[in-house]
Image 1 (tube, rainbow, N blue to C red):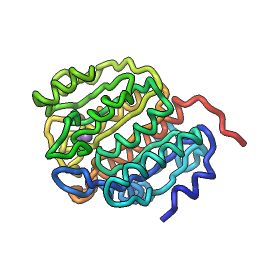
Image 2: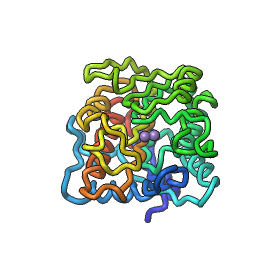
Image 3: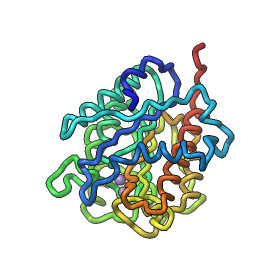
Length: 284
Ligand code: MN
Ligand code: MN
């Protein structure tokens, strides 16, 4: 396995980088997302799909695209510090990071690093769940809690959530307290316009998809978005995307392999949109 830290030195400002974050200790219901990053890479390199985005950006030939491999993480709370440190180091090199989870708990240490660089980040959060619990089963760092921690720490100028279909009274109170802009599944329409201004961070929980499209997640929640809906949302982001994560893909539940392919497709489209919305020149 590549050691991501060693290959940091090859990075140039403006590059779009992939970083695997194989960590699922804060999953409340079942483990599995820690094995997602190598599974997504396996699909990307399988020959089943090409590396082009729908807009024609070929990630296989794109000099601004670089896969750093997976982080080697400790067990326990030290992993959060390692994640934050790795992202901080990458942001100091002025690169754009697309992280592959792991469960959704990893978004908190990632955004702690982003918060040191960006004070008005617009976060677009696609998920069946608001992930706003103050604590879940005694764990304040559960994958059910990251956006409570993120909002308490003022790491976002805005938090816009799409696809929510599990809001309970406690999380509704939390959403109001933090000023979260929730576009739940009852309200969302394919022509819903997002007035996002940059910089944007996209956090994509695979369970935003209807389980018919993506059974490989720990928490099946019917009534979600289609793969096409999510692609349209990604492709419609017109502000600079400075970071993103794809989380909660659980290969253990993905018997057909379709969820891995959907995650790989989202990786390509997000990376391409990062390239397209970025405004930089590669140093030669
Ligand atoms: Mn989530
Ligand atoms: Mn979720």
